[in-house]
Length: 295
Image (tube, rainbow, N blue to C red; front, top):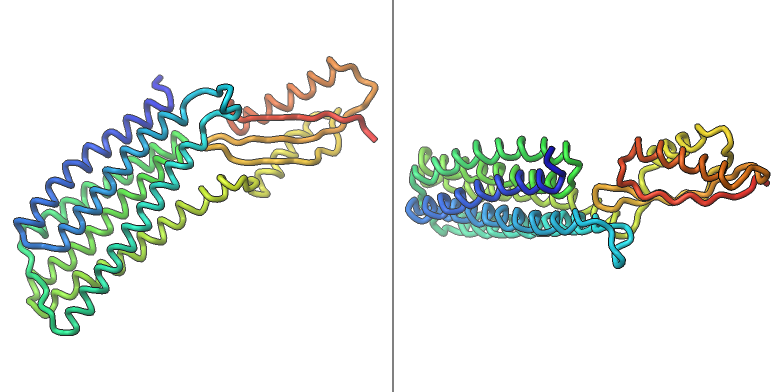
């Protein structure tokens, strides 16, 4: 079976190839079809292509084993990739928002909006279908692989599809309803840009939580306590410290046992706890157990 890094690479490579084709197609359609909205949509697709390259590079690094300089592995490089994607998505959304607002203000002040052609509308519809299909494929694979950066990249695909919906509405209104409806294009772009910014914030927030070493959710820590207490020799697990490292987690905990048992017995109990925790949270879970005599 293909290892995780190769599967992530394969999923992302497919996305980058599709994005490259869409970038070229949208730029041609925007220029030939006289559509500023389609050119802006092409720029959005270009940001997708750039994030695909970022995922390929950072996931390759995150898949490296532990070494003398990285005792906990390289998992946070994947988190960093997710954060970079979120930041790019945020600025793309803000850029579309500002551009849309400027176009709306200009139109209300009497500035004419350029009339796009049917070619630009066809390109927008094709982009919606292709990018939505790519989103569903990528998010499914990302969740199956436990890769936050692949899931983040999937949302970038969907943001592009939504952007193309706004573009299609605007272009369609301008093509079929006449000049007075051309303002639909920038209005739709503003609505879509707000959604894009929201998605970006939702991607960036968990990355910040991880990079500042925020503890795992309370229900996860309660599950850790329950797994530890399955060993009858153990009492009072305390000083539990948890954090996420890319697609893995780290657990450090103090436990109490009868001070009269042998070191060999204590080690066996700790090993049993470690096996249960890894069975629950994955083989790459980092576990540190400190043993103390019962008070």
